[in-house]
Image: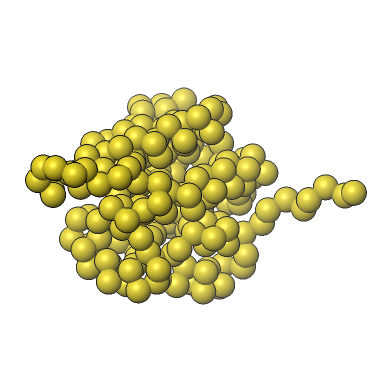
Length: 212
């Protein structure tokens, strides 16, 4: 039996077909509220009705109960991701209720071309399967570069990474109305802009927040 062919992104001119329903904006509270009707209309699920969410609490304030359910649900999601993604160049972090997966570019992409690597495709396959199970979440896919003289080029490169990851998700069963896609260029560095730090700043961050 021959080995499976390596993953290759589809032609760029087809990307918008795959990403129909995605939002190209930051995943703010206001943008999630605006997106909610579209998300629900496309079969999206809210956190308090998710199959993997804890049972609703019998007593107490509804808002407090909903927050407790969301916290427990996201803790389970965080553990599932952390347990499955013990690889170099990948980290899973909590940010309040949200969960953030940081993928350094070298762990995700080919060395000298803007294409998802075999290792990166394996990682995204793992993430896709977990996101399909924990489907009561919105997903922000944000690309970042290291410091570049040309801010327009930095923005384009970071958006390319974010879109490639998002297209992969769309091809592997992720409801695109869950997606917020942004390219932030060299903004928000997480390491020094030296030779080593630059490799860390070139990254994709996948931010997951409960859908309510």
